[in-house]
Length: 266
Image: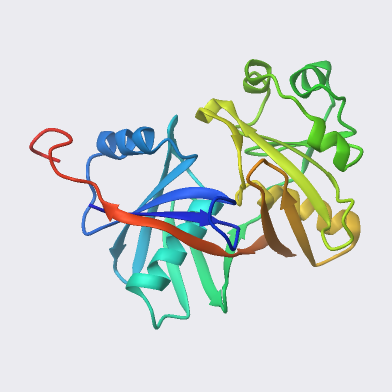
């Protein structure tokens, strides 16, 4: 099984978000894909098989399969454009959230995703206890988005994983305006429910962050920085009920997962 490791939403290795990408001729059993994700111990391992002109794409975290992941989609697109679809201008993926399209634009890869809803919810003491600061606003869809006063507040968040895990939403994100004139907003993302204490750079949650900031700032396109220790930059935009998320990616390694890792059916 061929496996590539890609740093996504960055132009240099050892930053951005790591994703393992396995390009397959046919699907292995689900249990094996989960074991590989646990062994890799990245926030995401992507598996893809070409079917009927499109690539069927699935994503596994160390804590289980998820329905949608942005940075591993970017990583998979980088691998396919670089090694398997060198002359293609776009790649279509079939996923649990429908069809996703990725276009190559120089060294950027632009992904077209469904936007999350901004369902405003009450700010609670539990939220404050989980992140150590009281949010100004809170919104819920698949993920929970907590709006903080400023960038310093985002950087100072010291999350309590147990209390984060007890909040609504699969993932909890904190966001605030950027202090950098070249960047519109900053965020950090926590996913203890998926065995990911802090995700380095998260494309999928920017399907919620982007609509919030585009509407608040009155912009169609914004530049976002995820302020994890590795960090990353996302170029995003809102178009109706779709979000464009673009970023760069670099290859860290390529190799093979060897036989003999399971039963004979593997």
